[in-house]
Length: 417
Ligand SMILES: Cc1ncc(COP(=O)(O)O)c(C=O)c1O
Image (tube, rainbow, N blue to C red; front, side):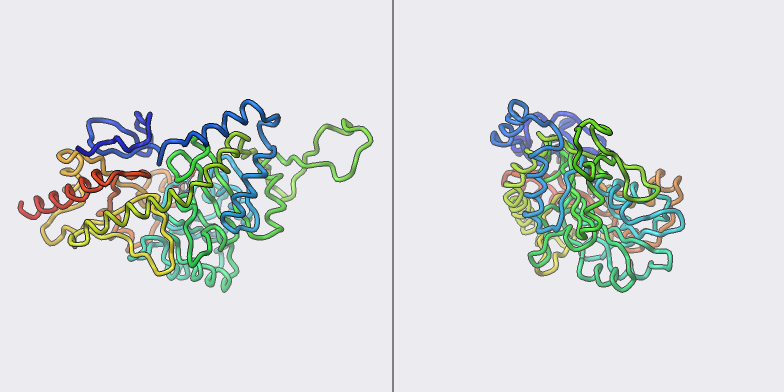
């Protein structure tokens, strides 16, 4: 009997994203990728017992250096979540009323909120029909003389075609932000996502491949000029006094200043225990991604003879790290919709399939804030028949077989109706 035996322990509650082991499902969607290893628990306890600084200390600097080395980024800054990494990027792009920012419409709401709140107009970009991430040609179509920045998302772990995006950005002199929340370790021909554009924003949230106790993030930055502005912006404008002082208290214990006119600094710091855990978890990231990729390959192989189901096409040289496992159903030939499919999968097969990343322009929040207009025909034609399998790191072969056989049986039942 397949079950949740492989899921991380102690996951009992539903959360706002629809995750968690709720109800009487045989297979459900856990709220985290995997349980912590003992070595990961140990580093947190060690900081609690032994570290003098609990924030802004040696573990933050070490984690930033480790993340920089892992990704090959020019600069890396630990922050309290990816939303705030995106928020710092939006500030550094210098966006404001009268500007336009092109953002892919198929993503989590946190991608767009920090850009919308600058007062810039959000222009939604469509997805590519094969990769299901942003279509660079659609970005180019939507550029106007007001466009200042492009925000792309390596959604589900699939890298966006960054060489094409960067060529467009260079031609039109635009800033590029990469939302890498779901794609740490994803690469194009060996180059990590988050190192192509001006900024890369990573999440260490509970549901991500690696997490720092539920919340956390990293901002990678390409230019030295942008990087010089991050520490003050990230920590209430705090910095050292420019010259040595005869009396350490005079004129004050610490200095506070701001480098960008009109911008108030923030506090987006990540504590030392979380940074220490970040360094430790980074050691397992490749292994976690390899496991997710392997699981995806097993499912895809099992469904190879099921033409009604398709998955994203991975371009050669791309490392798609499968943060989620999304499929598309085409039951038009026998008049069946995604909801018909999921009714059986959820209520008869007891598999807690979900649908997610509703096109953002459909949400009341974006509509009420003036970002409800769209011209995204590919996403409109694709999304309503997409769904996600329950997904975590370490799904047993038995559970994978149950997912695959249940989907096939469900399609057979729909065809016979
Ligand atoms: C695509 C995307 N962007 C941004 C975020 C925000 O990340 P965080 O929760 O670390 O703020 C998420 C988190 O789920 C995400 O999936």
